[in-house]
Image (cartoon, rainbow, N blue to C red; front, side):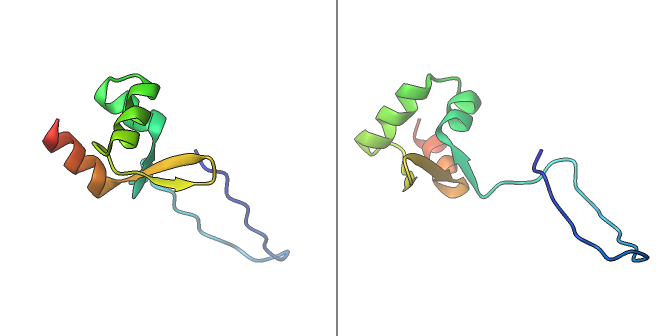
Amino acid sequence: MAKRVIHIKPGESVEIRVSEKEEKDYYTVQEVADKVGLNYYTVQKHIADGKLIGNKIGRSHRISKENYQKYLKNQ
């Protein structure tokens, strides 16, 4: 669960609504591996081979929801 910090002044009231499950627009390599039942390194290889399209952010990849759906259809 993501941590959220809210600063309020004394006497102020704030209503916070947090959904139980936030829908993601992207997945990590590990999340994709867990969802499809593959090893982390196999998913990385599929990205390297072009079977799965991932965007490199820093030292890790992120897979968009759309690319994940395409990957599932082609598998």
